[in-house]
Image (cartoon, rainbow, N blue to C red; front, side, top):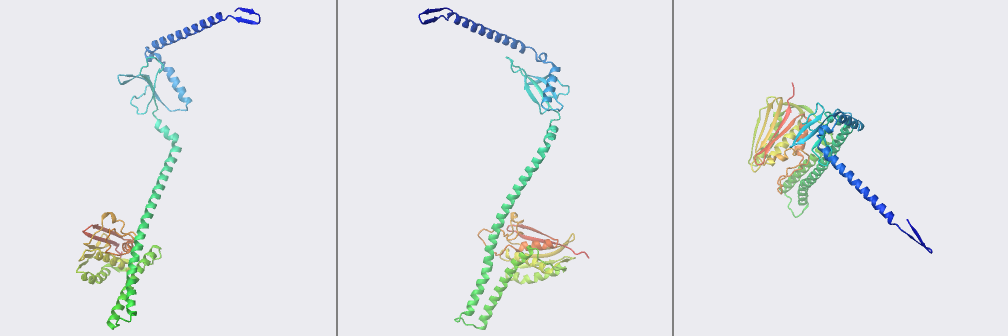
Length: 398
């Protein structure tokens, strides 16, 4: 480097320094290129070597043992080096018990940095993997499964309760509407009859008074029966119903109920066929409630018959039971409603037709009375073909 001075001004010559820098950069670039070429040659030569000569089996096993132990895996394992040729896998080396068809295998491509990568794989699987996973996670999985089932059960129960409450709410609304109509009708009739008695413009002959008083008596009796029916179910559901158990002859009870209904059926130009053939008709029960049960079944058979009722009323013995059957040829009950007819307030939907009134309590009462007598009730019905109710009560052991 040369320095020249002209007064207070200095000049520097950098041509020699720039030349040295350019020469160093060139030498470094040449060295990098030479190293790259040598690396490529080495990789090309190495990739042409068969994989079974590039891998030391003992060293490979040592590496696998070390890595698995460092990862905390102590399970027995099987391994192999496989080569994929024409879509088929060939085992080049590995453990003696290696199964190529094992369903759960872990594969890793070998020598991924080669220029010409070949389909050689290291494959490892654990024969006892499933048992190990269950054992290692069992303390977490089992409570989780139980908790999941509990949550699903609570959800299903909640949904069931909500749907049931909605259904009960609808049924109770129908019950209130039916009850209002059933109670309002006799009240209106009694009110009208009493107004006739108070009306001075009406001639109060003995015949008129007898007729009006008869109407008041009949409607009062009807009103009392409806109220008693509701109260009876309320008492029964609260568990305050007391049964007076005694020996009952079902043939006699059925005959008494049939004689009372004979007039009603005949007045509608119908027929009531009876056959009380039970040879062992004695049961132990409450005669009043058993009578009410038979009365309700016959009452339904008459109400739900079309035009002229045709009813069969029978008793028989069957396998230690006294079977009482009431069969009609009425409108029938659809299959989807047959399991619900014994629920409180439930009435089979009839669309816009409401020619048969009631609270929906009759069959619920029948079912509960039969249950407390350790009996059974069954129904067979089809729309348009009629209905048959069968009551099974245990024969009293002598």
